[in-house]
Length: 72
Image 1 (cartoon, helix red, strand yellow):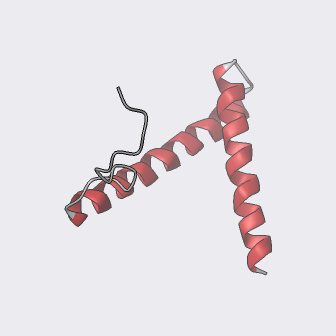
Image 2 (cartoon, helix red, strand yellow):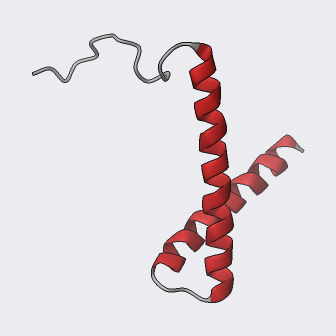
């Protein structure tokens, strides 16, 4: 059951991304509506992630301060 739910979320996410690209190229009105909803949801999710990371007192998880190569 969990696999089915995750598959559904994945299909919705990929479909939303396809609609965003299609709308940028001038798709029909319903595609532009889905793209707007997808971008709004993404903006909300990014906002909640920022609030959570600010409250934790540290940077984001990608920047741990270590020297991971890619030098001068």
